[in-house]
Length: 58
Image (cartoon, rainbow, N blue to C red; front, side, top):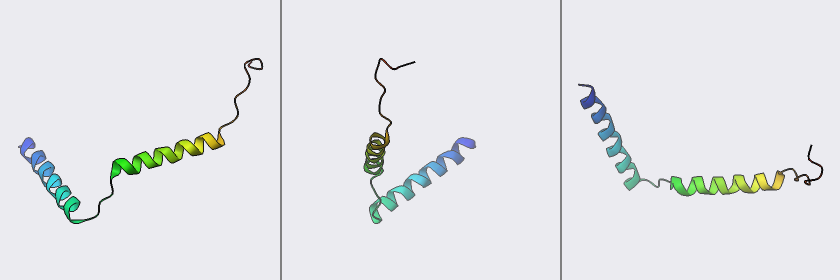
């Protein structure tokens, strides 16, 4: 009985997701994640400490 119950929730969730994607302006998650990672990389490069020269390393 557990497989039937889990399958029902999976199918119901898929159907709801399809309905939402077709009828509402859902953002492209892949694009949002890529934009966020790009922005984080730029911020990290801007505030990174300068590298020490190889002769000073302790």
